[in-house]
Length: 152
Image (tube, rainbow, N blue to C red; front, side, top):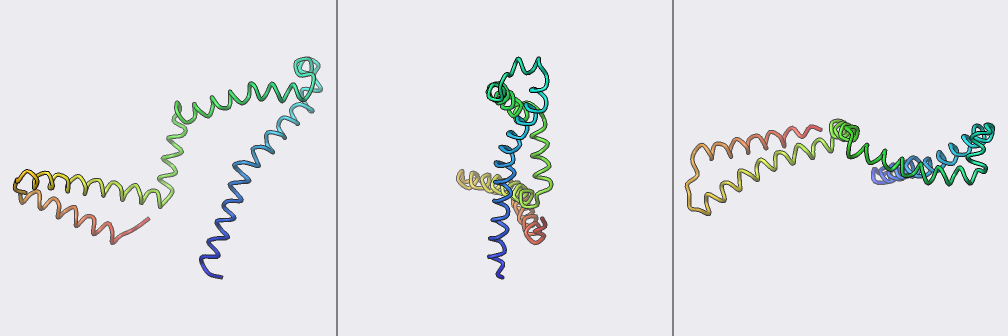
């Protein structure tokens, strides 16, 4: 079997896992949680049964209260707490391709900045000093070594 076909099957496996874990599992989990909590807890306690006389009332209440609360919790997670930043940091640190892209971007920014400075000098008919030429040569050598290593 060719590597292309193997890759295609792993892609299908990945799509299946995402579909299962990101979509189907949430729906099944929500239905399961609502069903279990209502029929094992609420139905057996008269006080709670008075508040939620039917399963439909329970689902409606949980939808009207639970969904906004969960949206707020998600918003706080992404915007107000350090949780998402920590997750993003760990993803960058542990994912070799993302880490390499970040490192490449840093090197390219440094090179572009130096090249822009030289272009501005040339445009204004100014001389490039030997120190500046050495600096660009150092950047070139650093990039050459960096490209040779290509470690993830």
